[in-house]
Amino acid sequence: MAIPVSYNLRNLWTRRLTTFLTASGMAMVVFVFASILMLAEGLQKTLVQTGSHDNVVVLRKGATGDVDSAIDRSQASVVETLGAIAPDGRGGPFLAREVMILITLPKRLGGTSNVAIRGIGRNSLDLRPQVRLVQGRMPAFGVPEMAVGTSLARRFKGLQVGDTLCCGLRNWRIVGLMDAGNTAFSSEIWADADQIMQAFRRPVYSSLVFKLKDPAAFDGVKAFIEGDPRLTLQAKRETRFYLDQSEMMAMFLRVLGISLTVIFSLGAMIGAMITMYAAVANRTAEVGTLRALGFRRRSILASFIVEALILGFIGGCAGLVLASFMQLITISTVNFQTFSELAFRFALTPSIVFESLAFSLFMGLAGGVLPAVRASRMNIVEALRTG
Image 1 (tube, rainbow, N blue to C red):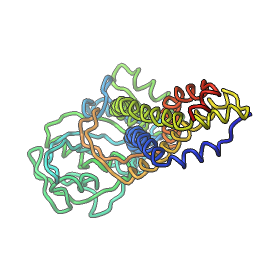
Image 2 (cartoon, rainbow, N blue to C red):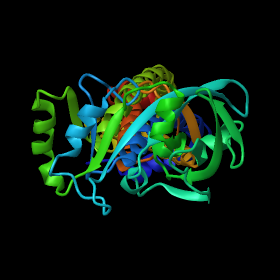
Image 3 (cartoon, rainbow, N blue to C red):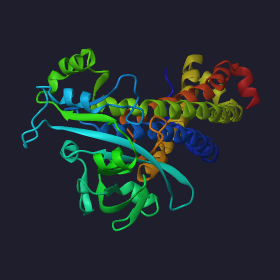
């Protein structure tokens, strides 16, 4: 015969102060756990959404990103001859030769940070339909003009339309603000690639980006580019490229978060254990009565474990509710892969909800199993006499 769950709920309500304190401790642990996972998920989501499945990014072999890649003009010309590249509507291949440069700029709130400048080609904007102008216009080709991502404009000085930015031995006029939603392009500055190369004395491109006629032809294109003896290049789908950019930072955040959570969870489990031990001590007569009424030891064991799991579940739900508000916050950090400033938001996913609730239930179980065992082993006569 099993003890009804309503019995556990009434007991938790009767001891609502200790229930609240114990559940609050678990909630804070779950809040930290979920927030760190949301941080890592938000970073990856921001970078993955930056890419398109139809686009291919070409880099130097061994390069991990645009910053450490180099492609000379002759290699770029070979890639442009690929028949698998979609036409751009102007009689040429739907391809852009791009350059990535890092500069240091002052923040509005003090300090400095690296900012990515992307030298673009004539097809760059069409290859990234998620980028849209919110003010001014895109930079013209052949002149020192720039368009700034809205995330950078909010956090850095001197990046508004009409301002002049001095870098690379030139004065650049900012002519537009662009918004790319929740993608990395909102944290970049765009300008004519040839102007960037001249200003920064860079004789090579960083990457080539092109759209495939047929996305299913990627494997053949990749094999050709990486197997051609004239080329020392590698090809990746744009989505895969940006996912790789996020892996190192996301792994760091997850390891840090799990380490902190393990430390905090020990305190929460000890708190749950103390609460359950106190419940056992205060309900000795109840336990004896239940045994006298015919409830078996395993029923009492299960009842106390269920009570601990309910505590964990309450704490987990409360922690997730608190963590969900983190989605309203946009933060910026330095991407370990590119060493440039990147803004992104916390992202709550169903998998994070499941993992957080499972972790909170584990804390409840770990904190309640020993008190439950103690309660189930009580002698009927001694329990009634003590009560």
